[in-house]
Image (cartoon, rainbow, N blue to C red; front, side, top):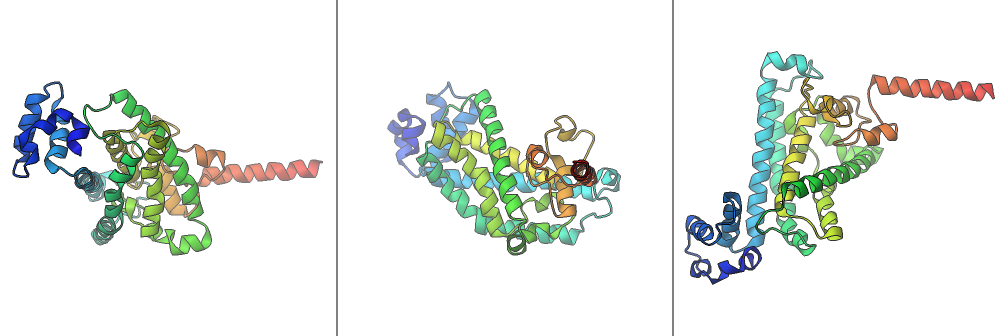
Length: 310
């Protein structure tokens, strides 16, 4: 029960045994008896105590958060696409998505969220808590959350690189991954425009990395998971935005993939398979673009000359 997990003191309060209590009433009681908690922690505790069903409480919160962040983060890119001034920063500025394309993309993504992602979101809580995830209060320190999120970015990027690369193998590309490449010039909403199989397969890296981590270390809080999901959604949507600004993160972190990295993947249909970082593509010689192709040609010519010289 949430009461036992969040604070055993709550269980003794009569109102928490009554389904008639309002959320505001529960919040007031939590605030009265737990002054050491900040307002966010009190709201969090009150939500679980009011719901009286931990899986349901996490499921509702997770799904709403995902929808608000996904479409909320996509909205600025929709607006930017409609303003000619920003065309100078667009990587493929001859291909601006139409309103029809944006609408059709949003409709399919929304359908996928309800039919494919919602069941996975609902199963996350019981699976993650089985392996040791915490969701009580107080929240973990920021340094620990930041460390875990950095680790998840590296883990997910590795998973994404290899399975994304596998999905470009002929039969798998045609039957699974081709749908995601409908738009050769991607835009923000298209980040999750993909077949159900691809959504589940690549989603394992996003959700499975934290679960693997907690199963090995015993350390993970649901709030850290939420922060990780929000940042990963921002990364995925921005990578599909089609825009590269002078202030984009990749100009300050050279190993960060950014929109230019993934935009080339959509334009060329091959190479640049990683999600967040550039090192896998660099080390395994799967970079896309003219510069990378030129380097490969020069390397091959050097090899041929070396053979002839023997």
